[in-house]
Image 1 (cartoon, rainbow, N blue to C red):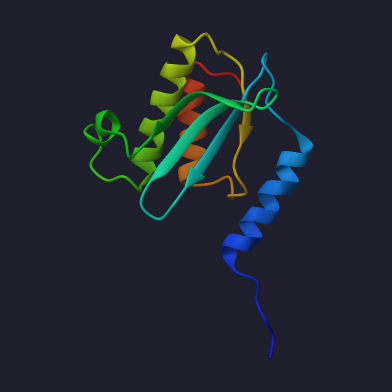
Image 2 (cartoon, rainbow, N blue to C red):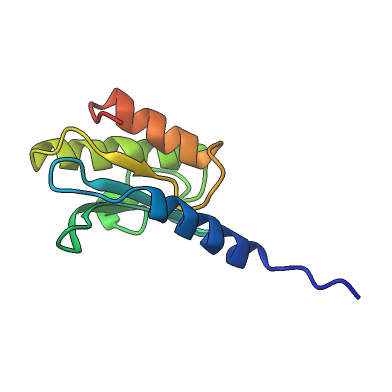
Length: 122
């Protein structure tokens, strides 16, 4: 019998490969994205000190009130705008995008495009 590796284990492995290639610095922190079946999370991290500088998610009340559903492309695009606005308020203009092992399409792409349009550079 063929034993298949779980999708989450495969995604975790991909994420570790991606993380070995780059890390966030003080000059260009890392924009890390995670999505579950129900919500999306984005945070900007300075890996040199291991500190989250800015975060946003569809769980937060002020974000959840502005969107109809928390797990669709429109919610991801709105979350991208929110994280970019918060980053610019914190003085962060350039980041390194970490897709978290997820395929760059759909929700992940919508979040990245919205963040770029709102003023983040990556």
